[in-house]
Image (cartoon, rainbow, N blue to C red; front, side, top):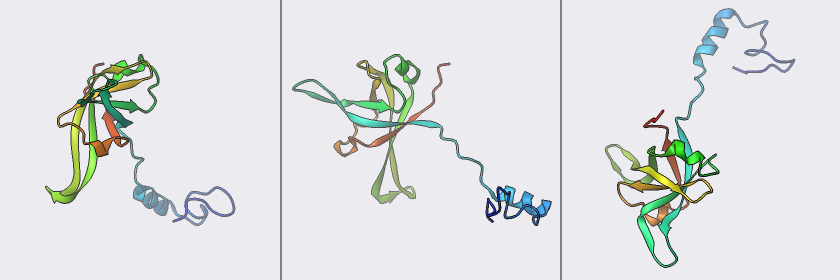
Length: 137
């Protein structure tokens, strides 16, 4: 089923030839638009000083957060680091390490997060999902 006809904007093929029943069937087949229930983030590294590195706290940059005032909304939110392993466990090769946002870090919108297990070094630069729960509103 084509969404646009060649002669102009049409519904499904040419609108004149499509019956109302065909239009409703085609409309039922289309999937509803997917809604993303999380914000995207990037793992920047571990909390550190000039000499020492504290691997129990990770630094996360959340998309769309550019100042420390914007980080207040994300405090306490859950973070999921999803990675793919070689062997299946419980029917899936994907695994997840959960954590949560502890506090902001600096003035540029980066946050500190603690995970249940420390993130592995291969996760640095990887993507995380910042879930929009629990809500504090």
